[in-house]
Amino acid sequence: GASDRRAVASMWSLYYFSALTIPYLVARVLDHHVLPVSFDRMKVALAEDGLPRAFGVATSGDWQEGDDSDVFATLAPLMQGHLREVVGHLKSAGGIAPKLAWNNALVYIDYALRASGIEPLNAQADALIGSKSLPDGTPNPFFDCLRHEEEDGARVCRRKICCLRYLLPGVPSCGSLCALPSQRNQ
Image (cartoon, rainbow, N blue to C red; front, side, top):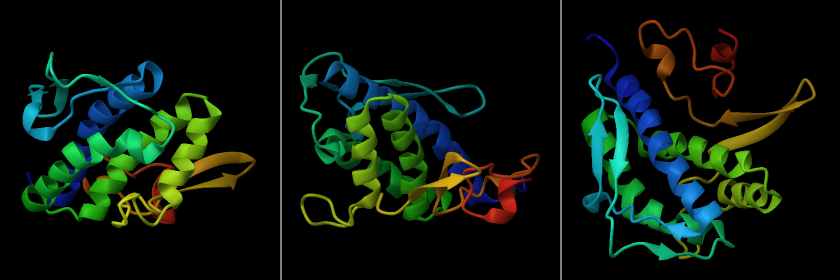
């Protein structure tokens, strides 16, 4: 309808990235398997409302075991083989800035790493957000996208860039994670 195209693309990407990144990290961190997530070799099943419902991965050939001691090595197949491609499509088709798309992906990556309750993964999440460069020297698209703060005695996560969801009809705000203080308490 008359919704802001960027807000629609951003909201869609939140569903996409959650369905993609959380299972990838669970398989990688808990089972030490690198799922074959190359964008051009995966299938996406959409629900009737157009939201991503499931991902299909190759059943043979690409499955491999991985070392999970370094967050950048853990995420390299996902970042290089899939996220970069999707971020480009979201920019061209949805009009959202790449930094917003990367921020949307990071929200779920950070969540999956921290929700495990395994301390080294918290440190890896901190390294992912705190490193200006990737190991190859290129800029880290996740650098400084989230910050974890103390608020009223609790640790809260804040985005650097608003997801724009408050621009959609029927959505009063982006919630407590929002980068915009005016939107947090709506």
